[in-house]
Image 1 (tube, rainbow, N blue to C red):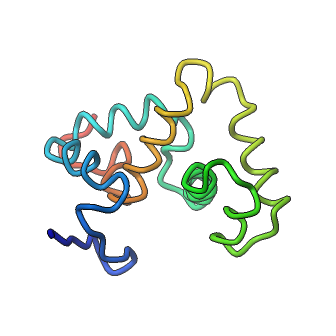
Image 2 (cartoon, helix red, strand yellow):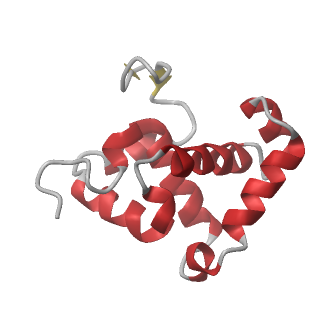
Length: 127
C-alpha cells in the first residue's frame, strides 16, 4: 500500500483512498490538470480564501453523497450554511453550464488532494 502526504496541512492519504488513484494519474503532468481545473471551476479555481472555502464546501457536499447535514458535520458549520454556499455556486450559470457534476466533483477532488499546486497560476511556466 502506497502512502503520500502533500504537505503539513494535508492528511496522509493511501493510494486506495477514494479519488487518489485518478488524481495521482492526472498529477504526472500538472499543466493539463491546472488548465482543466480552471476551465471547470472558473472563479472557484482562484487562489484566495473565499474560493477555497467554496471548494471545501462543495467537496464535502459531493463526498457525502450531496447530503447537506453530513457535509455540515464534516465542515463544522450549520446545515443552512452548506445549503447556502452550495446553492450560491451550483445555481450560478457559469459553473454548471458547460460541465456536469462529475466534472465539478473531480476538479474539486484534484484541488483537495493537490492543494494550491492544482490551481492555475501556481506552477512554473503557467501563462
